[in-house]
Amino acid sequence: MVRPSLFYYYSQPRPSGSFRGFFIPTPLALLTSFIIVSYIYSTSHLFTHHHHTTSRFSSSSAFVSTFSSPTPLPIPVSFSNKNDSNWSKNHTLESAAGKGSESQRSPPPQLSSNGKSENNDDVFHDRDIFLEDYKEMNKSFKIYVYPHRKDDPFANVLLPVKYEPGGNYASESYFKRVLMKSHFITKDPTKADLFFLPFSIASMRNDRRIGVGGIQDFIRDYISNISQSYPYWNRTGGADHFYVACHSIGKSAMDKADQVKFNAIQVVCSSSFFIRGYLAHKDACLPQIWPRKGDPPNLVSSKRKKLAFFAGAVNSRVREQLVESWRTDPEIFAHAGRLKTPYADELLGSKFCLHVKGFEVNTARIGDSLYYGCVPVIIADYYDLPFADVLNWKSFSVVVPSMDIPLLKKILKGISFEEYLRLQSNVLKVRKHFQWHSSPVDFDVFYMTMFELWLRRSTIKVSLGDSVGPH
Ligand SMILES: *[C@@H]1O[C@H](CO)[C@@H](O)[C@H](O)[C@H]1NC(C)=O
Ligand SMILES: *[C@@H]1O[C@H](CO)[C@@H](O)[C@H](O)[C@H]1NC(C)=O
Ligand SMILES: *[C@@H]1O[C@H](CO)[C@@H](O)[C@H](O)[C@H]1NC(C)=O
Ligand SMILES: *[C@@H]1O[C@H](CO)[C@@H](O)[C@H](O)[C@H]1NC(C)=O
Ligand SMILES: *[C@@H]1O[C@H](CO)[C@@H](O)[C@H](O)[C@H]1NC(C)=O
Ligand SMILES: *[C@@H]1O[C@H](CO)[C@@H](O)[C@H](O)[C@H]1NC(C)=O
Image 1: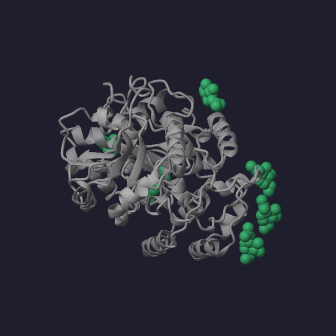
Image 2: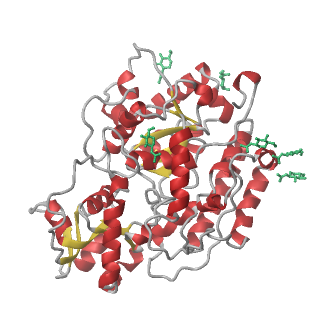
Image 3: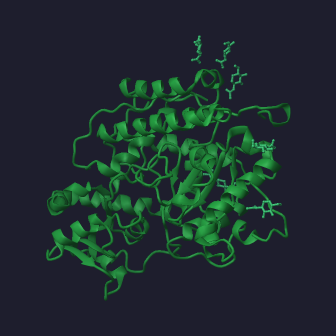
């Protein structure tokens, strides 16, 4: 079905889908051109300072102050979802690059049929379209998980973990565990929209036989094994495959498996444009969320007296700047290192909670702020925010460029009380999208991640033979 809604999401699947198809027989030399082209393409987006609600590139809002007035934006050209086989045939490297620049010049298409503007206060860019697509996703999306032999010595890396996941990398374990039990799984690979590579980077890291040093080799061998044993990898060069990783080591894990890095969908917590291996136009952000049961008991009665709060290791230039600027301020609480008082009290006692880029991109603080009903302030330039394809981050957070740290107080105090209440009530509305459940609950972090994958599903089936033709 072709609807204006398609303008709402990303520009990604089709262009890169056909890229990927094209990719397979292409000599390596072109790979380099591809990287250059996509680099130019993505950086040109970075610097046009645009700011609109719905495209895939709205995630770049991470470096656009919410206080700058929104300018009308080019929205990447979108194509019909299913019937683009002709387009794909025409879609060579040159035309792909051309499409990119064309889309920058083209006037923004109408945002939506119901006339919602980008200044909407809703937590979704477009609720109706999202809900409609979500239903479709929920009904039709199918994932095939590569099986392994019962006696595979590395079954531990491929199976969901037995223990209850916790801590910073819980999202990775939770995702796999919930996916395997979900109705998205199909045992019939010909019915699959996407193929799941079930290895866990966190488990590999903890396995003495693999360890940090062995992860790259393991993944190279794993891909080699599945591409020998099944036709699906070669069919698309991995473009309809995905993996999920929350550990920051993941950023270099694919260094010996270039096809994974360049073709597959990487759903990762380290979703920074600056992290090598993360390709913003095809990969997706998995939020780093601690599993938690129920709401904090004092959420409703919490009195938020402090203006803003940060505590954590000062392990990046941005955090240094923050602490230097605000350490002695009576209203902005910027604490270097661990707190002596309970962390939760601060999250409950502050109006705004600062998420400041550290040594690694670490989003656990976003999850924390939302959970405790504190409006997140994101100071992490070039960070691909979770679910930015769907969620209107401007409606429940404040994004401050690192450059503006000295202006932080002015910015936060410039937010009126009414505006704050609106942000905070939206925080309470989006919390459910940032929660894990053992059995998934509609619109929780599992379903939202599935939706992001669905947006990126490759709709172009490259047929290399009768046995593996499109279904
Ligand atoms: C795509 O177009 C072909 C005809 O060109 C049609 O038979 C087919 O049903 C279309 N598929 C979808 C999903 O619209
Ligand atoms: C694709 O192109 C062929 C001829 O080039 C045309 O007959 C066919 O209808 C086209 N299909 C679609 C879906 O546009
Ligand atoms: C593909 O290219 C041919 C020839 O250049 C053109 O006639 C046709 O319209 C193109 N199809 C699409 C879908 O762009
Ligand atoms: C999604 O699918 C599950 C399982 O079939 C079902 O329980 C749930 O109600 C569906 N949600 C929506 C919004 O369609
Ligand atoms: C790949 O297959 C070989 C032969 O079956 C096996 O020994 C090896 O453990 C496999 N490697 C991975 C990473 O799956
Ligand atoms: C896939 O491609 C690889 C490398 O070209 C080749 O070794 C392998 O046999 C192919 N797999 C299948 C199933 O044809």
